[in-house]
Length: 339
Image 1: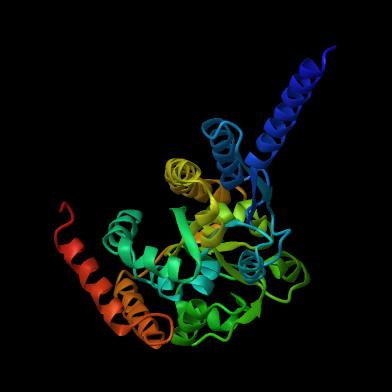
Image 2 (image 1 turned 120 degrees about the vertical axis):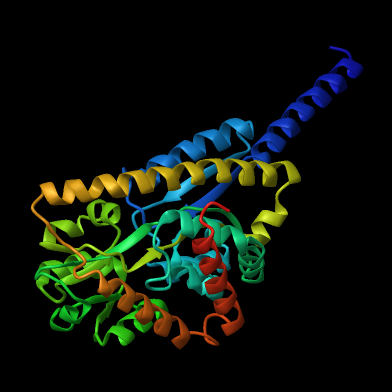
């Protein structure tokens, strides 16, 4: 082989190696933590999102999931997100509030009556929520609500005053739950969400709050006998990605993450709401008794309790101005439901 041909072959080989190295560098694995258990509706949709992400990015983006709480409670996950140990996470309101406290207003007790109110009010303040998340060092990829939360107990609840005789769980460090229970006059037992099942089994607690779908997914329903028939609150959920990580991606990759996120999280919200309704029938079939809201006047009393609870946190999680604007927006929507 001539000298020039040897040089040419070596150069071609070097280019192939460089291309291979560039290809290896181009693949970005996004570490993604969530409390949702593998096999749940939540994780099934996340897996679909991942396949879509890989396909649209040509293999340059891929999620690596840490599901079922293996990365710890949501406060642990927030810390890992800030340290760069993970790049994305699915949060309930508890985790979202660690990053953007004002967002917890969406989880306030006895605020929303149905999913349509949730969607319309949240959309009306879209700019405020996005700004709050970015100020907390994250980017919102999409909302994915846990659903409306109900009380599950081992003795029947026909009035919130009945909760005073129950060993009620409270998600440790959750100011919204703390304010709600304080207004009701209940002294709950604060625990990490990862300790709930064991605590139900040992009798440390005999009451929890959850969406029907989550109660089934987490198997909490196997340790309770009653479900109170009126919702305490809507439990928000969302997927966030580290802003530092997001900003480091090429513009095309950022666009793919946002676009696929909106698509699959909207799908997840729809599925969750549908399956939540179906889950109530499953719970009844499993032997759980649903106690009705009776008499109807209790609804007005509960909404007044919610109003008081929300004001306990004004100036601490969110401004009184934001609270009043949101409440007025909700009142206006109720007066003009089709507009």
